[in-house]
Length: 215
Image (cartoon, rainbow, N blue to C red):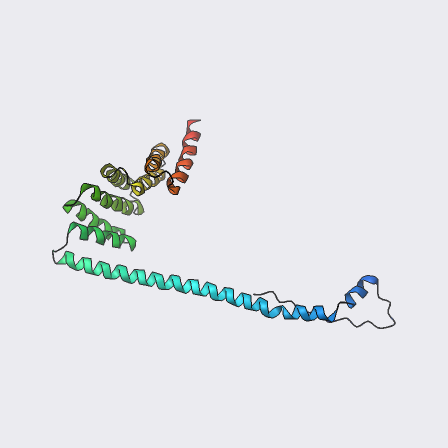
């Protein structure tokens, strides 16, 4: 609710009453100042209205964006699912469907397709690292940290410079309170991407944990 300045009415002082100095100063407030105070009401309301419209516009944009993303994911999943049902799916199709289902947070269904992609993979081994990383992410969100760690380790073994997988591995190890191993994972990420903000922040945090435990 906007603050509204309301001009006070000028007090009427009987002639017979002696007004102290402070009160006479209040009585002598120029009429122009009161008019100015009344004039401030409209700009304040306008600012409030524009701010409210701005919030509504941002909210509407986010809602529409989420709807469009959801529709895109649904259409993608439908097409990939159809190829899988007809037996025409490739290992990349299983992987892509797993990623789509992951983005929809359907982790159980996603792992089934990602595990299938892993079994029938016929592409480059370095690209298979992405499948292991996606599986690790699903298992992590299903509170299966041990399985997530195993998948992340396979990912970085296949692709040592896979910074995202190193960060994910560190995150999973942190969840298991394996601070020293998590620190090593983040340091590996920093060897390939020294400016990686996530690895730098988490590395500093794990260093502090390790130093405290060593005391």
